[in-house]
Length: 389
Image (spheres, rainbow, N blue to C red):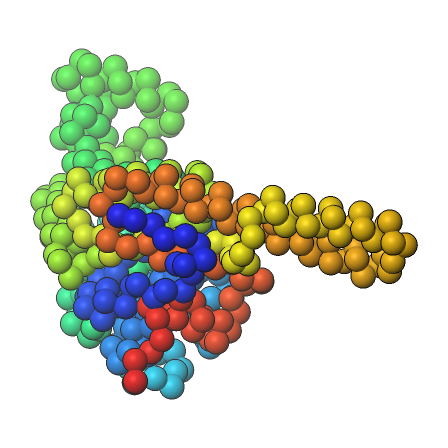
């Protein structure tokens, strides 16, 4: 992989092939690097290229809905008003309703599903268990894929605290729901109803006594009820997780790793690139957002020397210092921009050296937030190039 310099790479539009050919695109990366905007711009580019695209966002900012011409994003796909050869729909992930739908699908009876959803333990876990948001994003992707409505589905994945979080979420969820250790400790309660102290398993009884004092027996009742109600559903959850991973491993499912040029998100991007390769998943490319462009020409040292000479000659000649000062300041600003741009280029190249990266797309820094469709279109053009005639 040979990374271009920021000046050469900004807006070169290398993701056109992925937008044209993929069925699923997943943008992933650290928080605050422009991942959600990148996802929306890729879906918009697909619509301009004649495809029916859907973008799924995670906890979107209101400005994104405004950029798409919507009052807000709903939990079901809604059309984006757009004058384009294709169509664009947008939605946000509702984690709770997605988990509820999953329970409804796998519960043996409607009464069993209702009992689970009414359980306090389920209500807490479905909102706060580590990996739940990532798992539900993948569950929603699978559900929408099964509908067969869209040519391209773009998923804005949750920000990763670690590059492992997203890919490990299905395994963590199913491992917890199997709950071998906790179910072993709770087995006396699950078998004997609420007669905890009549349990024959001495180790489990001791655990229940201590846990009951700490949490209250009502909480333990809820835990036992939760695992009892979930009994028989683990295989369904595990099978679904395996189906999601199979979908992600298809050639038409590809990842777009998004980063900014700062070292911490670059390290995370590199880690994720490595993990995708280890898992046999397909990388469409890396997007480096918010790069500083810089004037092409003299190096920073030459520009600073020119500013010094200009100011010195002006003082010697007693000339118009306001004009000279402004010109010298402009030269120093150009020098600073070239220094920053060169540093960012080195950091990006170093982060991705010896990595199997198909392409790197550089997107330049813009003043202000993206708040309207033309602004989003400009990002789309940077990512995929001009719309073909």
